[in-house]
Figure 1 (spheres, rainbow, N blue to C red):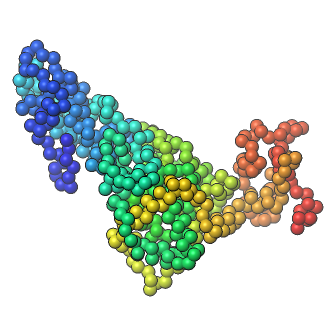
Figure 2: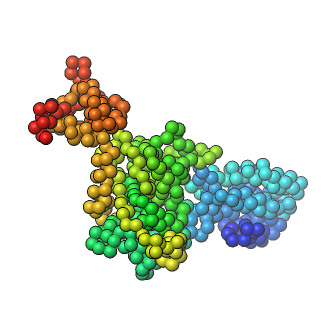
Figure 3: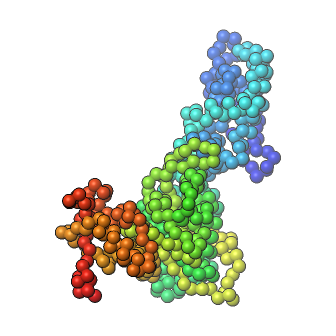
Length: 507
């Protein structure tokens, strides 16, 4: 029905005769006789549109008949419109203008004689008012076929919407979008092509090296980026591009974001960091349907909000809302990418946190005479389709079974060094404790020993509650109820404190 143009003045080509022909082709017309029942969903004549009843509901039925292929309503978010490849959020409220077009073309004469001219004039005036238009849309948005659940938007983890069509990331094949089956609201900026990308390859070798170790890093990066392009979140990793300036990490993610379009977004400052206030749920709403979220504002002295990191790198459903909208829930499809020159502090840490971290060191500084201004823009303009094809190849590798995201030795060493530097509690366990099935440690005594160790090491001690949770994680307890109770004291099973003699012997 609608024709979407770049012309900002004409949103719709609305031809009453064409509309009438469309309605007549969709439903049988009612014979022009006085005792005939009204058409079920409305009627069209050369004079204009006739609803089945002169009510808001009658107008809503007409709207559904005319615009069911153009609009869908997502509860909790709003109206979406089909733009030939995807269901795009109707930020410009074109749905209001479409409803107004319909109201303008309501007939003022009924050749069947069912409605009087006076009643039709009155109904048309009401339909053209803001109240009438809003009432029409309020009823139309809940009609069968007009409702699109938020959980279905961008929910296919193995599809990527592009201007050229829908890419199956398992095969790389492209197909024509179907508005009744492909509920995508995100899209890349360009379509993929499999063609040489010499400038991109030169950038990668300049960044990671042209030797065997560098090629290993590039292959890993292609796999990690390919995984990120999918909606699969099973990897549960947090890539952290770390290094001083002029080393390519910003260019890498700029290219990724420019190619992925609204599949990618930048997180607000401090998104993953501890802060004295609770973030607004609209922050989380922006994750809906995304594949990549870039967190780049890392300052000296920042500290991870570890619970938030675990939540947003896991696979649990997320509940959020947009400004002045209702809450909705969705399955996450995003991967967080962090970059910075500083490594945030880690408090509790623990296996659940560190198994997610992938510290990717950017150690090669590009000399000034080799530096190219606006390199990300140049790469996208000159080789964008080929780079997107390279990313899709990485996704195909991952989905074909190459799912080891641990990383090469360079990544493992850098991540381990980060953990050893930040994980003071882990060092305490290594230096002062021993694990064994027949051992136990009294809760209060173990925490007191930990506090003393932190004081001697000049390290910050976590709270007793956080320490207890970390210790239970270490020994495999799901809850405090699984601790051993003896003489009114709680004990951790499977762990013991080393005596001074045992520590001396180990030394």
